[in-house]
Image (cartoon, rainbow, N blue to C red; front, top):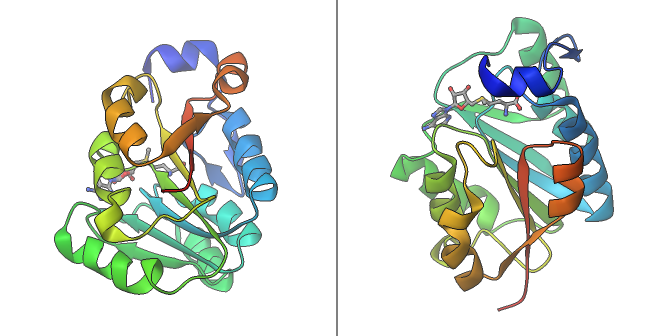
Length: 190
Ligand SMILES: C[S@@+](CC[C@H](N)C(=O)[O-])C[C@H]1O[C@@H](n2cnc3c(N)ncnc32)[C@H](O)[C@@H]1O
């Protein structure tokens, strides 16, 4: 991560023994969102080094699933995720087989609230795919978030889709104020 963001915030810190590809304030926001919305299950697209996933694993006891097209996790982090019961898979999030796996294993069979976190290779495409009502993944009160808001993920480009799918963006001024680059949506009723 070179670029403009390094000039604005400190991204050189480590978390659970490795670098995490989030600004520090994002870690606090994830923790707060999990508590405030009673999140039990997480689906993360784009594991990266997996240390953010470990936070999800510690906090969300109904189940955490994470996909990455490449394995970037250290042996230590793999072991940690395994102890936490996280399902970590080397999968392409855009592959129809991955989408079918999610439908079968997460969409139909869960009780608590879901946090869908999109941090893979094409966040807008992931947003379109995984919030599609045909997938049946999202229910009232679930949360959807995309990373790199303002650069790779432009909320205005998915606005019509978000409106059609009853996804209301929340916490915009708060996240702008501390430069957290997350776009967060709350799923409303049909
Ligand atoms: C920014 S990193 C994820 C960072 C991680 N979520 C964190 O906060 O530390 C983006 C990851 O998305 C992965 N990725 C890219 N395209 C993908 C795809 N089609 N399916 C799954 N993962 C993908 C990359 O390999 C990379 O590790």
